[in-house]
Amino acid sequence: MKKYLYIIYNQCALQLIYKFDFFVGLLSKAVQLFMTIFIWRAIYISNGYEVIKGYTFETMIMYIIMNNFSSILFSFEYCFRLGQMIRSGKLTTILLRPISIFGEGFSYYLGNKLIYIIIYIIVFITMCLQLKGSQINYLIACLLLVIINVRMFFMLLSFISTLGFRFIQMWYLNIIQCGYQMLFSSAHESLCEKIIEGELDYIFVRPVNSFFYYIFYRADLPSAINLTIAIIVQVIIMSKKSYSILQMIGFVLFILLGIWFLFLLNQIVVMVSFWKEKSSKLMGMPEYFVDASTRPKDMYPNVIKYLLIWIIPIFTTINGPVDILKNDYNMVAFLWYFIYLVVFSFITYWLWLKGLKRYLSAN
Image 1 (cartoon, rainbow, N blue to C red):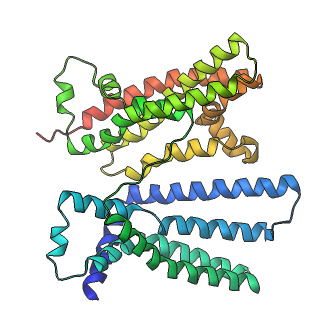
Image 2 (image 1 turned 180 degrees about the horizontal axis):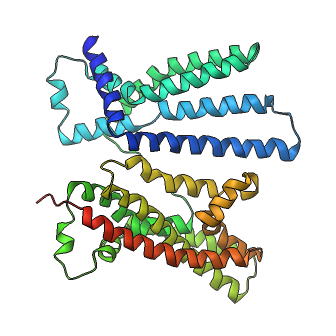
Image 3 (image 1 turned 45 degrees about the vertical axis):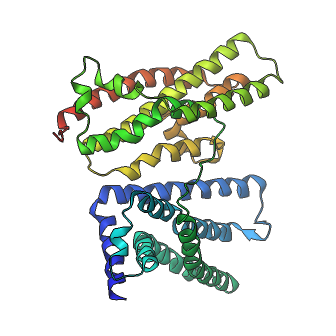
């Protein structure tokens, strides 16, 4: 038993080695949680309901927090770990040790989640102190159910991961996201690691601009299929209505500008690796912002609307093409968006040059 506790302790310690990465991960979870709460707050206020399907707003918040807790515990990261070890042959290092492979896997799994579990337990206790009667009983029953399901879910992961298969990600029929994934995602996925490992040398010996070479040198062909499907679906939808030539041109222009904006946003996040050795949690932040912008902006507080329209204009990026087709757009916001993209492009390029001065070669 003691050897498994050491594994749990080591995994907890590893989580805290890169404090920046860890706290960015917490922040991203908090952003997702508050965005969901804002959605349901808007639903309850706009309809004037105190109870929806037996849920008050307070119990709905309790359910949302527990759902987020479950999403952290019940993740499929362990499948990828064990599957990779099987294919690479590194599983031998564990099989040679005097421990159970499932015990080691469960300790590794629990150690990675333990800090989050402690945080959510504190949240649960705080909620129990504010609730009464049957609500407390409901919360405790759900908590016990989650604890029981942790072990069952781990056994399911162990079974699936021994098959060595990878899960196929769902395709999102969004032209802007698919366009970004086809043109830039492959470069961004490897750029962070290459910066940290010092493997950018071969670019610098070529007579090309390193910034543009690296972002355009490889396209993701599977995403091209997704983009084609998204375009076909969009054309079918738009064919049911009549739009002017200017609307069509504006729609296509905003799609292209949106793809470039997503590139700049992700490029800034990736370049943090020049200054921070481990910043993988930060990589997910642009996706969270984009996901938040797909909801109606009127349901958010004014501070968030101001932030996502004028400071980081993701609302304009995602909603701009639709606003043009609806003839319901803010010309001032659009003008600011064009100026923002030009300035943001120069800032991104300037930060790339600054980051290269901090780059250390592995050779």
